[in-house]
Amino acid sequence: MTRTADPYRTSWLAEFTDPRLEDAYRLHMQPLQARQLRVALYVWGSLILVFGLLDLQHLGWTQTFLVLAACRIAQAAMLFVLALVLRGRPHLVSSGYAVTALEVVGFFLFLPIYFLRPEIATLTVGVIGLMLLAMFLFIPNTLRLTLFAALVGVALTLACIVINGRSLEVIIGAMFLLGLPTITGFVAGQQLHTVQRKQFAMFNQVQIANRALKKEVERRKLLEEELKRQATTDPLTGLFNRRQYEMLFRRERERCRRQGTTICVAMADLDHFKKLNDQLGHDSGDVALRHVARLLTSQLREGDVVGRFGGEEFIILLPDTDVREAQTVIERLRRTLEANPVPLEQRTWKLTATFSVSAVLEGERDIAETLRRVDAGLYQGKHAGRNQVVVV
View 1 (cartoon, rainbow, N blue to C red):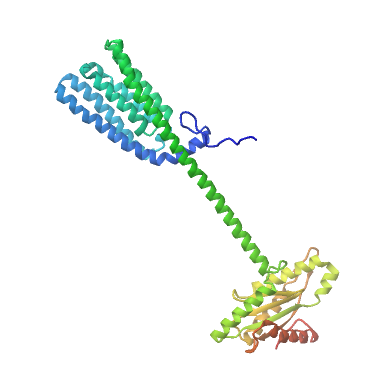
View 2 (cartoon, helix red, strand yellow; view 1 turned 90 degrees about the vertical axis):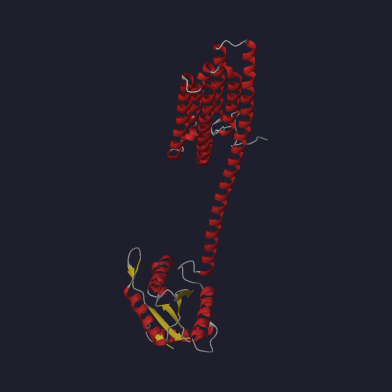
């Protein structure tokens, strides 16, 4: 069985093998590393100046001291300047070239001490060893660039020892003293960088999982809303279906009863709708039903309810409305429907409807009881010539 390659695999230099992932990691770590590097630069520069006081103690205000002081001040100034620049350009820490150049220049500025104070050569080598270890552990940079700067520092130090005419035994000892912190620092830095990238990998995986979960929640929410819409609406017209408008009737009737207001129920039956279906087909009939549904909902209040009773019949609930007001509203609907023929593919078709409206009586707790009276009024309107409003 073929094993899937680990997308978060790292190289021996503790970098992601995927360049895009490595760039994402550096961008993610950039703010934190910029703050850490600024602190390290301030500490580094301050220590360089403090050690200058030791030079003054041993050398006094001599030319040798002034040369060493100039080197220290120049090095500290570069460190402080980079620390200030990082505030506005934190991206410099991501590449690592700026701090690496500063480390290499720092080693060159440290060279004069080998020749001006040869009596402390052993101490100087020890300080260099500590600097090498600190570079790997405390200076935010890529491992490859830190290793490069460390090797430059080791090479320059050994070159100075050779130029000073030290014995082979001293040179080998210096190599050991400098090689030990370099190797130790490299291994420790490798572990540190690997752990940091593993943490980023886990963070990245959590982010991906959270995004996937968020999308799934949104998808389920949309599905739930769609299922709810399908369960409560008529699929053809988008109006409330019987189950939903009956539930709304019970809720609104109880509310109106508590508030002492009236709720009215109306029914509409399209006139001669069978003729439209027979002549133009059921597709045209569906277009006409959707047209009627849009007209009815557009003419009513937000709190009013429009539902499809079945076929070409519609139910209208008018909460907080007495019979006189309901008659006015329904008459407006009748005129609007009559004045707006349904546009079909090859022609328009004038639609009319017969309406019946009634207030819900005190003893009527179920909409079916009210609809029986309203349906009787609708029957009267049909026999009286259609296209009219009957109040029962």
